[in-house]
Image 1 (spheres, helix red, strand yellow):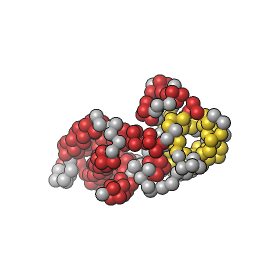
Image 2: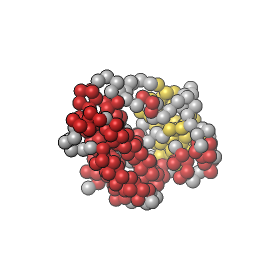
Image 3: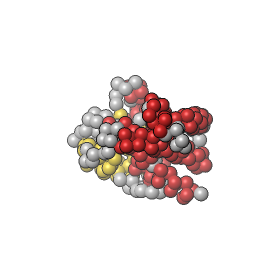
Image 4: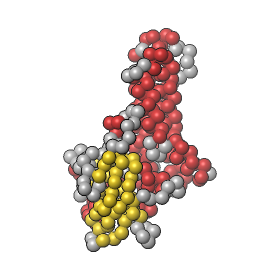
Length: 272
């Protein structure tokens, strides 16, 4: 959310930046549907029309994360003339309701819920971008790169878990992926992330492809590291409440959250 506000050129919405940046105002990101839309995989589920000094918006967003009553999120809506507008919405109100309609196997703390928008009004002061089609290419590299912390942090925590387990170090000494290899791959990926962050402003398709490949490599490391920990712990990791199994479920979340592994591979194949 902070990233979107910082990149916006709309003076009204930038007034929210300072409070959001320090956590005085809370917000989440809502890119799942528009990210897939701009890759040609979905259509926009939010529809808008001009009304007074703002936009009247309707629709339903099946999955948005980091939301609670009073939190704000960014949504992209389609206008009748084909243009797309991005604005701020406040969750947990009469016109923007949130519903926990699914129980995930892990990471329920992400606050991922369904958002119903029966008739929300977004005034001009809450518009992030009047032309979302032009704005999204400016923010998409940063949006994807900001997600890499999930996978790298998970991989490092798995490596630490494996180091702390003396029995696993002994019994699983000949398994191919140990904590040293995990940490080395995480270090290399972190260097790639840092280099990519220096070029986040590039809008070319080829540059975004490289960002997606990096995001995919981070997901793969998280999955492989968590799987390796499960193999080291064996039956101990398969017990209900076992930390190794929790890490495996979390790694799967990293790989399926937008842009997911299947989304990235489809995008790379489509652009090849």
